[in-house]
Length: 565
Image (cartoon, rainbow, N blue to C red; front, side, top):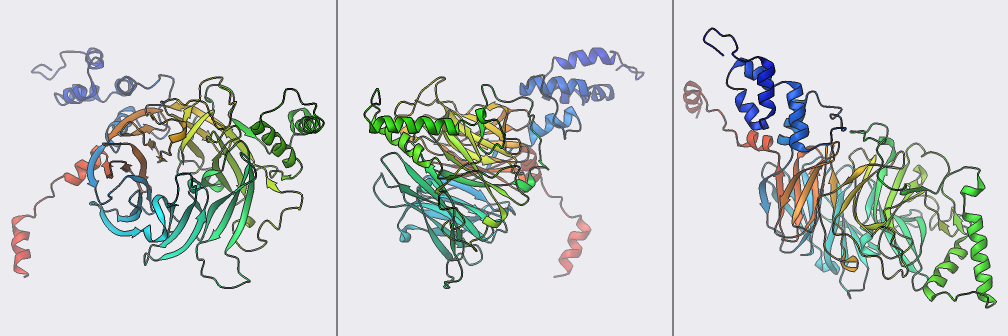
């Protein structure tokens, strides 16, 4: 600008110059004069800066809640919890899981040191209580969850025993007195368990039928097991599910259907994942018999069994395949069909990992829980089921064609995020005890639980290295705008849910097992690692606010305050 105040360069030329600068240089140049300040806040300029800096695909529109490109750039740059502010070292072994209370005032951690620790979440995090679970024959604590009103904590653990043992237990801890209120058996232990209501929780049990055939029973348990009355039920069977080819039900969680119509962020359903549909609706009420392979499959199984009995089966089947065929045939006509139509008002969805080809969890089962099923009152042990309906059919199955190592729900419960390590394309499972090799790259898949469709493309960045038979769960978490996950590469990762881009890598010294956002403040994230630490991360702008010097009192008021003592 010359001495008379007239610009020496037109705005268009300044704009072209600014396009060649980075974001920090643009902001610095905007401090030179009023003309440059105006150009430095140009919406088209920041649109270009946004797509270029964050490497977002040009066909992805701006976040629907964003007010400007400049503010959206600042949100992704300044509001992501990527600054380490505190490291907690109270655990003495690997920290496996973290969970926040719904209020955000407390969180819990579970560790291989066999303790469940409860923490106060203040500006400086402090330990509130530590529960040692070794007196209850636990080997380690693996999972926890607060109930909806934050009065009770569900803690899940693994029993001491041989390496092949799969038994575990769920404990309920009062958050008022820290007393242990009840203990419930849980098998296999990686069912984990979850709350269905404020005072009832879901556990699992496993019954072997053959070498590779079993059934999983999911139980509804009262959190308060001290009721001594034959007229009051403290446990009731929810579902009994047939398992084929060494598969089992694991990792149960509950989604509230009532929240589906008001999502925090509506993801684009017009850009489904690549490849064929992964979701199979088992509750379709269509009248086209050709679309239902059940009767034809039953006839085929019957002919196969008749041939085996008469010695006509060619070529002879291996024992594992024969057992599976017989189990499928016996289940025909003895399985209660799924509920028809849309989800009932007040219903919830029970979600869990399962499979049909191998012990490796490669499918997600979904079963509707109706309001009358959400209490331990009423018929017990499946009395409401017809005598011929021995098993319960699933409503939906999602096949991810890979090993599932993590799942998490969005805060509105509408979207299910899944960590999966893919099988090779076109792989075939010939032996249920030898699943296909799995990729080192972890795919983060997204499914809409209202439409039962896969949405978005898979998120990638994190990696895992353990083989199929040593693979373990890596917990992820979802906030309003972000999704985070642990990984075996010693980092936690944060992505933006709308733009599908990785925003931050959070370093640890060993595997990151669990991540969790504060439900009241998504700019606070906790990570837990095999390095026996918990780290707290805050956004750059939150750190600046917390570290800003407080204004000193004016001299007169300082003197006035001193005279009052």
